[in-house]
Structures are given as structure tokens and as C-alpha cells.
Amino acid sequence: MIVITVCICLLCSFAKGRDYDPDKYRSDMKKLNKKLNEERKGVVRELRKDSYFMSDVKAKEKAVQEQERAEKHGKNLAFLQEQEHAFKSGQLGKGKGNKKRKR
Image (cartoon, rainbow, N blue to C red; front, top):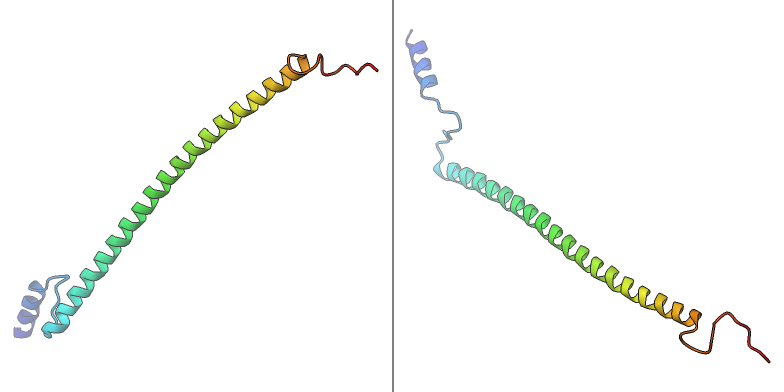
């Protein structure tokens, strides 16, 4: 009867997650290691978020540069086409471009 009462009292006072290690140093080291692991996971999480953010920023900058390059290329191509049209229509040079030279 006494044994059952003692067991029931011990079960009532048991707290899940509490460290019942009698060695204080070992108990503290366990707590510090757990805290260190939590901090490490948090830092890795933050670095991952920063990496995603930076890749998004770089992608946006690259898209803007690509668009500017395409606009510049388009303007240059339009200028060349205009020059070619002017040359073939005879506005530049001697007469029409498709006529044969007379001897």
C-alpha cells in the first residue's frame, strides 16, 4: 500500500520536458546545447530568407537591364532599316540602288 502511494506521488510530480539529472554541470550543458541548436536553426532560416530576397532583387535588376538593352537594340535596328530604305530609294548616294550602271 505504501509503495503504490509513493509511486502515485512520484507520477504526479513528474513534469514532461524537465531535466531531472542530478549533475548540475551536465544539465546546464544540455540546456546550452539545446539553445545553441535552436539558434543555429534560426540563423539558417534567416540566411535562407535573405538568399531568396537577394535572388529576387538580382532577377529584377537583370530584367530591367535586359529590357533597356532590348530597347537600345531596337532603336539601332530601326535606324539601320531607315538608312537602308533611304539608300535603296535613292535618297542617299547616286540614284536608285537597283539600276545598273550605264557604260
